[in-house]
Length: 414
Image (cartoon, rainbow, N blue to C red):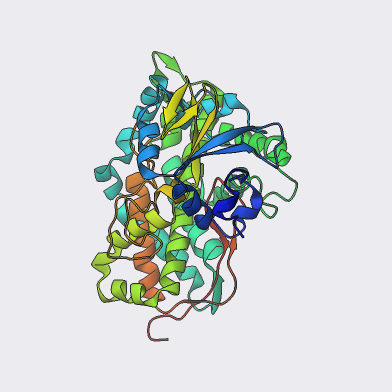
């Protein structure tokens, strides 16, 4: 159970005990209401060599940090609260781990492919992928919504953008799951060290095969964009290509999968809300926004203070970690009435894709389209689907997602 507000002087936000059943909303609520919503964790229990960090828990403060890259750097110290076991050089090779001007130049390479208009052109293709995945579970009484629907659907969508052959989807999904969920004992039974010892080398090996093929014969996929891109007249180095590829595949695999499964769980748990969507499917885009608010796929990203500064009355020293907690800001009582209530008619603004600034999520339009199609097609086929066993969550203060979700299918008319 999360510790109470009386323990806030000593509580360590990233401790595993707080994350066994998803984000610790009670703990974040206590921090937000403490009068000191920029909270200090003095250490990280599982990583004794890691320095402590500041937790930013309100929407306004996260917005402030997100818009001020000169004070709060993504490049200086890494993008996660824990950096042990993942070299800073590799984090900095992804544009999410860069500051301007290089960040802006690299991100711009992909911007045109992810505009709402360009993404809308892929709707028929994405719907076909989702329908083919749902076809495969037709006739089964019980499925795991994560393994049988969410994972194969999102893997094929991002795979189609990147030029990954369909037969490699499962291998890439396993790599992304084990790398992003590094501390989870099921996703990484060999321990966190296996990420660098085995996972990242396999990422490089698999990706460089695709890179070699694109160098020999360019295509119109995003891997080819990375291979042939030039920034200031220079092509990207191999590790920059691989980590750019890794970022896009990781985000494409994990973000939509996480929010879709949490959304379906919420709809099953709140049949009155599901009925609203069944009565009028045009409400589904609004329901997507509510799901994104309540169930952001990534629990945090981190910045590093470049200079001494003050945030919400707290003095932060140069070099200290500043961690932005989106499950907290998206339930900020100053922004949302009854923020823990799932309301598909709310249609809220939120920070699931970041809080503005240069690091606002590149794949926003794609995620929204995938989520809409996944929910539309799942509800159309299985409007009375129900849970038939306990959920498990990835044990991670970084990715916020359901790991297993057993569902009994009750198709329309069944």
